[in-house]
Length: 442
Ligand SMILES: Cc1ncc(COP(=O)(O)O)c(C=O)c1O
Image (cartoon, rainbow, N blue to C red; front, side, top):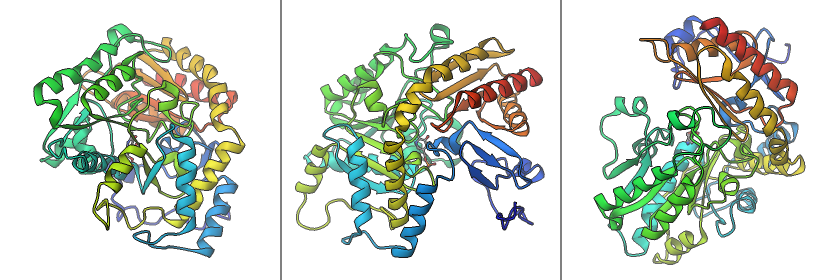
């Protein structure tokens, strides 16, 4: 393509790639040079159908003209403005647009630049809230095994994925974890929400009994866990967690970084499951990932407690230079407008049954141990090769890529989250390519 000026780097060594097998990649580079709609294109212009919306983020599809133009226009008008004790119009408008989508009574929006920053911001707001109400002893933060909340020390400490923690020594003190909700014996091959496992929420009562409710600030969970390999909450689980939190004055935080913005056919998981948290984090789909941006939405009560409960001056000693960056704000407004005008949530809901059938059609492929789905998320769990956990997942990922479909492997689980503009013909191609890859590597 003539319009790709740098389609092939001449040096791969300088870049220390994030969350990557640097040595393998640099010996076998797989580069993505441009993207449009449902597809990426390699430097030699080979199409790769995107079954992952990048990294759970380009929900409206790639290269959307409306978003590109909004960013271009904004770059010419105002490249940057500080937002500490100053403001620029688009940050306020972007926050109002987000507040239109959050559950009623959750109308306060704090901007960050990523999911990790959103997770740490949410935890800090929870601590500040209790302190503002005279309960500064509520410092304990509860997460869940297999949870992923990014890579800051807060999110990492509350997160529950071993390999993400073990290189880094000390975590935050005063954390604890609920059990994960994966019950393969009872729930294998469930369509949508699994039936068994609501009782796992009761573990929060045990944690309360152990530490005392008066020491616990918040519980943070992903409504649907993604990074660990797609775990869908069992029927009744979120309801029960909500009840226990409310009974003990503990804040419930949903990490909606992957579930936000149409992934479940609704603006947020809170709406789909009809269980409202006190705080929710978001990122990724907020700007269709065209400019990095994250956000934390809180209940109005939390905002009021912190803001009105403070003496004159700064109320929350937290924020980022790029909170509400003009280009990100412009991208968010254009993205949310696209969601509205194209009814992307409705589109996702419409194709969900087709997606579900397609995912479960892989149940009989060789070595498939489980199939999980919810909204436009799919997880295909492969049995691990003896002594080589993760090898099959990696091989399927590489084979699919080379056959022109981008999937994601977390260990031996293939996770998929296509852009919401996915059509049945794309779904068919994803499933055929996966079936062939799974058979080939078995
Ligand atoms: C649920 C969840 N929270 C937080 C994050 C971290 O987001 P980021 O990589 O933008 O920091 C992710 C990223 O995948 C995520 O899935």
